[in-house]
Length: 116
Image 1 (cartoon, helix red, strand yellow):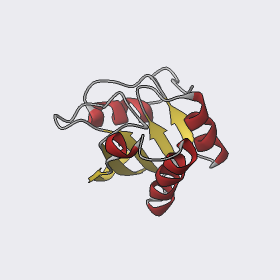
Image 2 (image 1 turned 45 degrees about the vertical axis):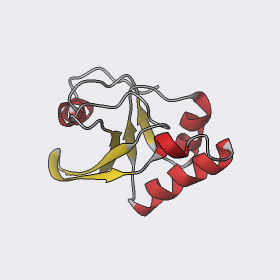
Image 3 (image 1 turned 135 degrees about the vertical axis):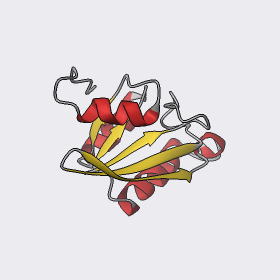
Image 4 (image 1 turned 90 degrees about the vertical axis):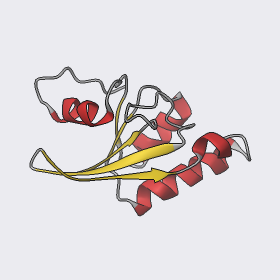
């Protein structure tokens, strides 16, 4: 499974999905973290540089290129969530704190389901 989470410089979950400056792409197999790569995506700078549709397309391209199946975020707007679900990407919202710990919580079946 491939999970994408917005991350702040200090390693915490950035509360802004569509305006994140940086995201982590985690590859998980059998519940274990195999890899964690962080990317400077610049969505914070690029958000208002064009149309909403253009911004959503930019994010969709990144997610497709990295074969993302799940997105975890503190919050996202309804149009973004709708787009991700149409792409077949599962969405977990209301995650916070340390990004790696948030990932572990998303994978833990005993944690409450936070899908928006």
